[in-house]
Image (cartoon, rainbow, N blue to C red; front, side):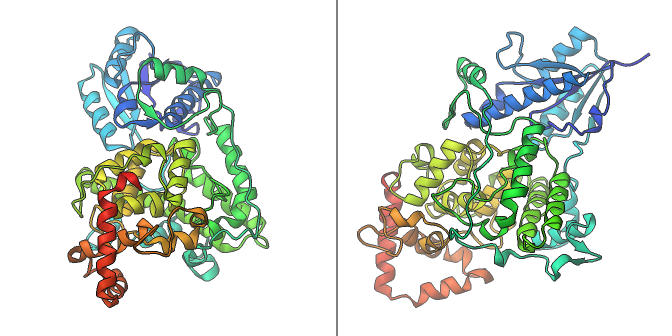
Length: 512
């Protein structure tokens, strides 16, 4: 006699290829549920809310079409208890399930919540792996055990070796592990930018439901047109287009920024990856296969830069999250406390670079890694913004933002709030870097070359003032020696003028 089992699937566990789904079973029912706490732990972009709910619904429909038993509880179901525990207990009581199973959550808050819940249920419980990541939760911690530095590059090389990605025996193809130095070009119009693949997923009903339940949100959406992939089929279409049109120039321009395009040559697969519609293994394999078929047209730096993002940074950040949490969430190395300026929520600022990146984020729920790091994050760090506020904004605004990947990238790499555990130096810059990597400065109210005075770019004085303000914390950092040498060689009157300008900007952030 079989034991009736109920299996919980979270909104970021939409993995059709999991062994759970290899064949339908009459004794297994899958449960997916939309609950209010998952919409309110931060204020989310409306596209993010719609995308997760739409993807969950599409996944449930796909399971049903393949013969699986599915219970789906929408947000506005009158019998929705608005908690995993309440809903699972009701399912057990109503359907006499004798076993509860779930997949390992990737966020610590949910990991703890479901573990506690499982212990209190009146039936036995079991947890399974998501079968998604290349490495285990504790792989990074074990790799760096006993070491003082946790360099991503070292971990990246170990993953390459383990999986044989771009390897020739024990040596990297091409003779180098990393071609990042070739991946820093400004977009120069040498090749046309491909049109991004977008969809017209109708989420009108989801938007109405969200508003009827009075869920707070921000950002923009055309209700009947969610552009993001909500199914594996759509995600594969995005991947296929990227491999054909984006990969040939991805590495060269992966750090570039331009007003001409919001997507450039980026894959925009992070939402599909982070919801597990696609796996890192299959994406990397497909990319390497596409590169091998077109080696004469696609240089090795294009494919290596892409592979590094997925099997390097993504796996590393996940491992660092589990190594450092929960203490990591409270780190504030620079003791910053200023509130986030209004333009992070409305995009209305005279700074062209920030206006473009923030407006794009609010419109598309997306920005690529350099826009996030060297514009939005750079300005927040230079301005002394509380990392808690920065964290909440990043976690809410981006379509792909789930805590395990957002927090180490934001609090660690972007805001240096961990004091250098993840990044070896703060990722701050003056306007010179932004000008070198973008065309944002071409039509700006501010002059990117001026440090102080009329129309001086805020990034310039804030940069030098940040260095001076935190000299005691940063001067001994070996990667900061040259910039402090440059600061110390400046004319003292020039430095004084810069500091006055920065003081004015920091006290008038809302007006910039």
